[in-house]
Structures are given as structure tokens and as C-alpha cells.
Length: 125
Image (tube, rainbow, N blue to C red; front, side):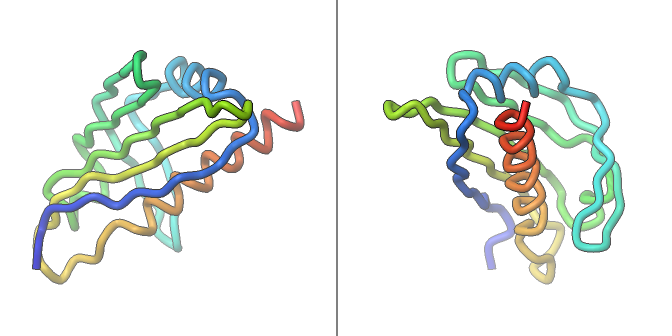
């Protein structure tokens, strides 16, 4: 079994890509608190910004995920489409501590839900 990998998903969003990127860029915190599938935890990261590709890269430093993963790097990337919509690509690059550890799909679902919730907020505002 391979210990390193990447899980990813795309979410079609209505709000402009720039709006998403600029919000997350300006609100990039050093520590996230989260609850996912009954697990509550914190995630401390080093934030890297890629203005050209509208990507937020969170290189994990500390947190509960490191009970399962040697490395953990969530990425949010936003792209504007020709039809006026946008696409959010979310991914997690990781290295498991052992073969028994599951792929981080639950964290990917958390990221897609964050994007969907923000999109609903932007549409409503």
C-alpha cells in the first residue's frame, strides 16, 4: 500500500473566484478549529499564497491529524470559468504514518463544505 497520496475534488461555485481567494487570503489564520465526523481538533499551519493561480496552501505543522499522517497539506484553488461561474478545487496532499490509516476523505469533505457554505453566504449577501 502506498503511504503518500492526494485526494481532490472540484466544486462549482457561483461567486467570483477572486472573491473566494481574497477572503481566504485575508483571513488566513495560523490555527483552525474544526469538527468533522465526530472529531474535534485544531490545525496549525504555515500559509503559502499563490496569487497567480489563486491558491491557498496550508502546510500542516501541528494538530490532531498528525496522529495519523506524517505530513498533511490542504490546498484551496479558485478558477474563473468563461461562463461567469467559478470552480473551487480542493485537495489534500498527505503521507500516512501506517498502511492502516484511511485516506483523508473526511477532511476533503470538510473543505468542500466550507466552500459550499461560503458560496451560499456570498449569494445571499
